[in-house]
Image (cartoon, rainbow, N blue to C red; front, side, top):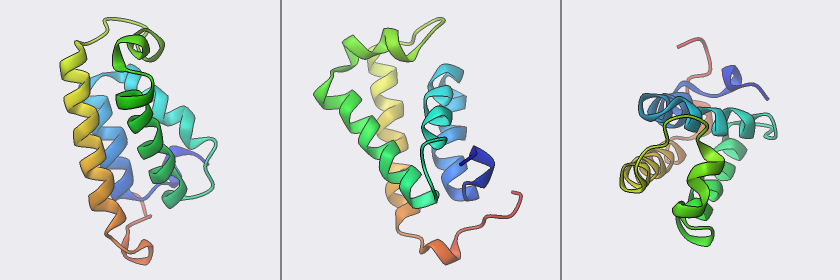
Length: 104
């Protein structure tokens, strides 16, 4: 799916938050969207990816693979990823039929 197919809540909670932080982080989520069928799957896969970055792989090893130009500090990245996780939890609490899919 395309990122334009995401609900406004999901788009803002993940893509806008990541874009404010660093465009390269947004690209990672944009690529992920291509492998998802719907809003809920994108939320789940985004959450899984973030948790792997934070735990399984360790941010130190991931920064070079995520960022192409001007990588941020590990601390700032971790804080932003935790903010996105919080946003994901908030969106997941909204029933799919109550999310806004029209142009925001």
